[in-house]
Image 1 (tube, rainbow, N blue to C red):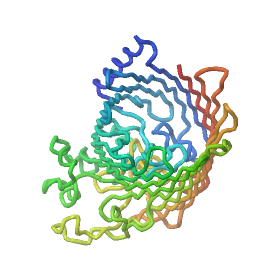
Image 2: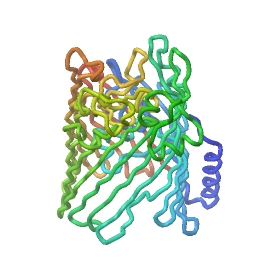
Image 3: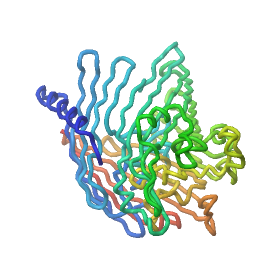
Image 4: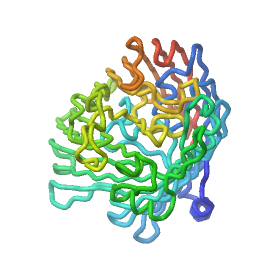
Length: 475
């Protein structure tokens, strides 16, 4: 993973400052191992782990430190997190500095991130960014936390530019000689904006907003050679307000918009009772105006979350229905190019795939929901998504067994029809189960043990049984 020297120097300066005071630095070490029987590591032992999982048997040692302090009126949060692994790639997993002044946030680096309105522990995963893949190094500016403009009205939003780091991985795993292709050196652009209605901690709350992520630039590599997709300073400006890349660009960028756009419209309503809360939410995924205008039918992640305050055996439950089969219909682009993208017939949105960018993935793992099977499972050298038309039911729940023991459970059932362009001969099915137990002993400070069992049955991920262990020590 390419990490800029300036970011590393910044972190070491922060770490040194914290070490001098002896109270603001929080080091840690962690050991993890996963073994399985069957085709792959079970789905929920490799998914939504920020890229720290492998479909192969694997083991790793992880260590680093996090730093928090106040520099006058600025709040500073920084971290360095390194992984040495067997079974997947060793790397600098996180290195970042996050500065906050009142409502303003400035972030530089690579950090684990999750979706804003969905439970990252129990959900199957938000459709644009779920925390399923490795963090993307980026520079972000905005309002990271809700700021109340009125007693019942708050807003937040951020803008970022970043860089995908998986070029060497793609070069190694793509079968160019079989007609497949990939794009290396991809740039990243992110926008998001959210509104909250309701008093802080009140009975009723409504959150809604939109995220828009873009892959742009880089170089497309196929059997015909290498094609530059626009990597100059002007491309960074052009991607900020979507538009055509010009006549000299490849057809997709010239006739429509430069880059691969993916986004989601999100809404979540919450009611809080005395000892419980209930939320309902929708994550509507889109790749163009047809999906944004909800011409994709029931496509999206539909969910309900229940939280119980006084029932520790089950304190949190998430129920979800996922559909990605409509994709605004089976036909796309029935228009003349000069009519422009707004007048096109929407359809065959081909979720997570694109004509110039191999897929909405990082290091082979889907950036969005892992129930759209990630390219890392493909054994034929194809780095695109082969099964993006999916219907699935998912339940996740958590609770406490005692003061020292807690658990997480997940059950998922999914079916796939392949893609519109390459449908499966028969409907493929999968059932996944997962049980994780965490032990945080009171008799010794800073230690935590997590063990889990995972199971897959079906044609999508294979028939798998896995055991996973993580031992963590904070200092």
